Image 1 (cartoon, rainbow, N blue to C red):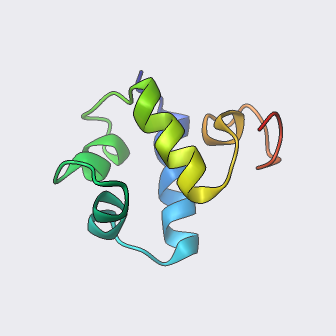
Image 2 (image 1 turned 90 degrees about the horizontal axis):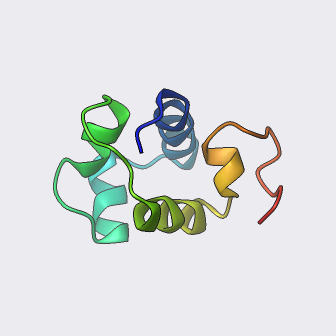
Image 3 (image 1 turned 90 degrees about the vertical axis):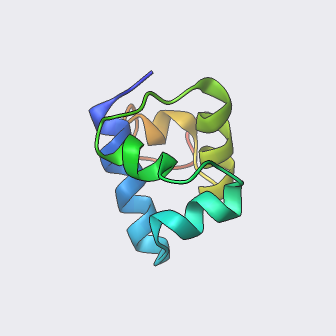
Length: 75
């Protein structure tokens, strides 16, 4: 699943936390350039990665997908 809204939200969360794409990849044990490719629309996000990212930022999947502006909704 690739979602432009997800890519935007991911970038916002990452920047708010003050971490680089590489740091996020390292923290989540993701392949090199994984986050860059997501944020640039070159990679689709699979369910497992979506859960990892939501848990990492302590937000709901609905928030990541911009279905809600409340980060804690339906978590």
